[in-house]
Image 1: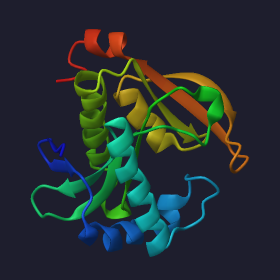
Image 2: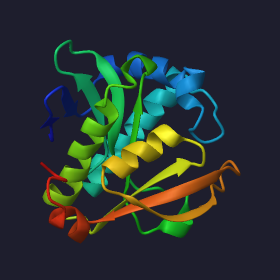
Image 3: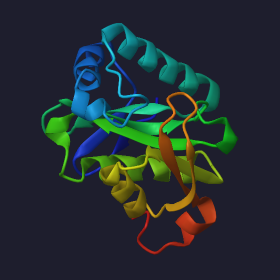
Image 4: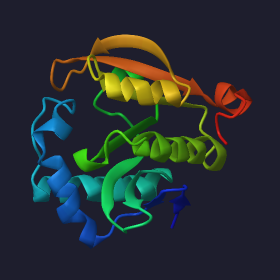
Length: 183
């Protein structure tokens, strides 16, 4: 079982006890504003999403990590790698994504967690490139992508909801040759 540690976070596989706090994150309209069509997700949908991620771990060797606050043990949300099946035009691809509860916004936690997951993807899983996809207007996510060293490569429409999205990309060569990028 893969576990990653950062100064403030533990990125780990999912536990049964994570479902309720993650469902609370998924039930917050502000958190879900930029996800798909903005629909909220209930506890069963959250459970199904976690189970899908766990299946991806088994089949792909990567997936979404539960993000735990090291000092308190609280579940903050998730970050990790997945195949963005919802946007077929970018496939084959692996996407870095994140979703944290609102109480964890604005402290650099998403960037810290995502940077660890990107490092894992390139250094442990040998990925050639990682993409990240965000809806146009989600400036906070675009700032994280930029901090990760990603660059915008296209703008298109998410066929699942009709919203405009930007695709950012980082190649392994650019990542591995960037000074301090993966410190």
